[in-house]
Amino acid sequence: MNSMNPTRSLFFKTICLLFFHVCMAPSAEAQTQKETATYEIVVLGLKIGNLTAQKLAAGDSVRYTVDSNVKFWFFGDVDLQFLTRSHFKGGKIIKTFSESKTNRGNFDSKINWTGTQYQVDAKSYKYANRTPVKGPLSWCSTKLFFHEPIGQELFLAEVYGVAAPIKKISTGVYEIEVEGNTNQYHYKAGKLEKIVVESPIKDYQVRRVK
Image (cartoon, rainbow, N blue to C red; front, side, top):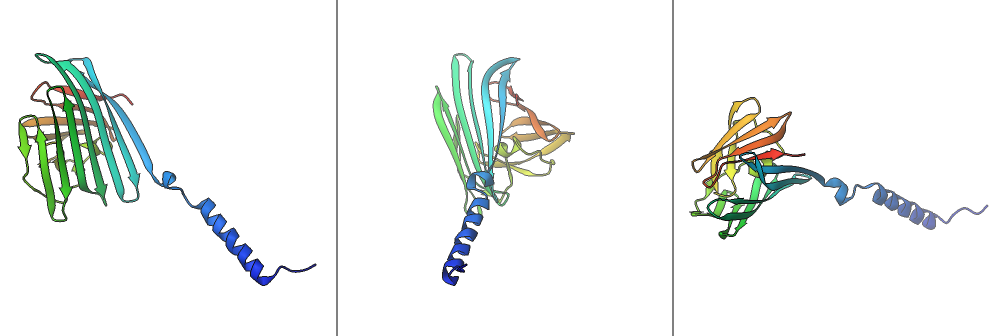
């Protein structure tokens, strides 16, 4: 029986080895971990909107997105679509973007890490801020939908472009005060169950659905 030519044998082994590594290597999709949580937005017991939070993690890069829409009456119809995105690298915030579209005007805020501080260009209803923020920081509102803090962290408010401390007030309950409004975050078994939000227009709650 004739043996295989050594050159052909080496080529065959190389092809088999490459094929094995291609088949066994994890795909980009497999390396990306995705989590989604859904909430309802409630005022005085009445549902006025929906909110979806999403986390995409790949290596040391994590992206959070929170997308919501509400409609209610406050001396006239108020229709609001709100989107917030944040990008973390190595556990630190490197970029955030928030956008609100309403029947009373559109606003957006951008925050970018420059290597020494956060560059801020924040705009919302009757508010504007371009004052830089010292950093780097590791917490913002989008991250709180998927991770419970311990109550000693410094929080970056994506809409206003300011930093504020996260205060633990009891087991699983945390408070953050930004621009005179205090929001309360309630966790159960490490999951965010509810946010009690102070708003210049109307206080409301964000309640977990699943």
